[in-house]
Image 1 (cartoon, rainbow, N blue to C red):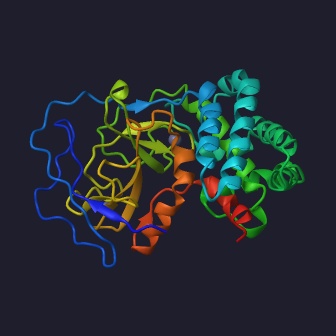
Image 2 (cartoon, rainbow, N blue to C red):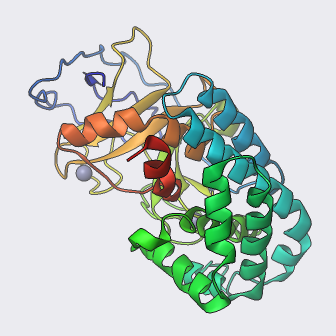
Length: 332
Ligand SMILES: [Zn+2]
Ligand SMILES: [Zn+2]
């Protein structure tokens, strides 16, 4: 476990909210703090897109590649490879069901996606079974258990499991079936979100503009997508713009700082934005450093940062449903 290091307030372009000009937040006892000098000048920044729609045709295959790359030198390599198998299956089933998902009319008249309606659809049941059949073919005991658990359920029990996954209320007996239920939900939600045209946000919304899901992580995007911070939905993979230097949970700007495990000269790929007003944090990944990063994959691979932040008294605001099977792979 590495120590956290904290940076000065994040830099901001003129179209984002400037950080508070007061003193640095107090140091966390037991953790060393480093600060970077303030940005001397603010130059005009690009106008943000209100949201970035997911691209389901390429998203899952790209996630599988990223997970395998991250697994190469990760302590939890088996677990990351299991989620990579899930992403492979999602890519395969997405191709198979693409037209059906488009035709399913998952969005309501206002263009909003009601996630709790998805498990009641026969299409969701079909996606879950197709995913399980593909996972059953993977040479891994954990994959076989997951597939067996999901396929053993009748439709009603499977639907109830999916609703518990959405509500964050899974039980011990859900451990093996939950990742597949979650993967099927994500498949349909992402396909629906690709068709959504949500209202442009003002840059301070903490919930997904398509499905009201929580932000899983944030990314600092490349100049091709405005070079600004976007939050990523934990359910439908929609990203939406949010100003920097402001807590995404309570909107406080004075207690915000960045923390990371490395005492790097450069800004690291994985950081967390912490808030000393509400003690929440959200991880921030820098796509200008690794264009191929995937919010879900990089979130799982940076678990050590979550553990350090938890020890420092911060709480996470958005859960990664693929964490549900971690205990199996970590031997817990
Ligand atoms: Zn969403
Ligand atoms: Zn806050």
